[in-house]
Image 1 (tube, helix red, strand yellow):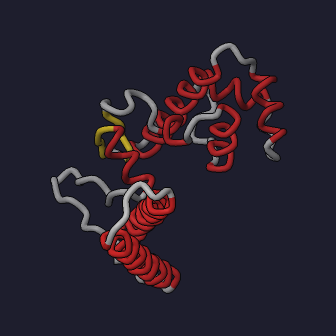
Image 2 (tube, helix red, strand yellow):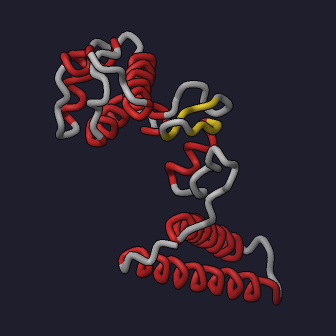
Length: 194
C-alpha cells in the first residue's frame, strides 16, 4: 500500500478527530438514536456511518452535509465537532501543515478573521468576506442598541435633549452599516474578493 501524502494524512486525522468529538458530544446516546434524530432533521445518517465515524474508520469521507446534520442533532455548533479538541485554547491543524489555536481557526472558519498566518508567518490581509461578517455583526449590534435606546426612551427613564440625539445617532449607525453590508454582499456576488 502506498504511503499517504501529508494532505491525505491531514484529512484522515480531521475526520478521526471530528468523529471523536461527535462521540463525546453524544454521550450515552446510541448510534441508532442519533441516526433517528438526523432523520428528523431531513437527512438520515445511518448508524453504521455513525459507528464508523466514532471509531475513526471512515477516513476522509465526512461530508459537509453530514457535519451540519450531526451537529444539529447533537445540538452543538459544527465548529466544536470540526475543531473541538482543546477548544478554545488548544492547537488544531486547520489546513495541511498549518496549525493555529482552535479559537483562531474557528474565527477564520466563521469569517470573523482572515486566514491565520502561514508557515512563513505572513498573515492574510482582511478581505471582503471578513469585512462583510464584521459589518453584519456591527449592524446587529447597532440594531440591538437602537432597540434598547428606544425602550429606554419609551419607558421614560430619562428625558431631555439627549434622547433624540441618541436615537438619531443610532439610526445613522444602522443606516451606515446596512449600506456597508449591502455593498460587501454586492462585491462578493460579483466575485470581488480581495
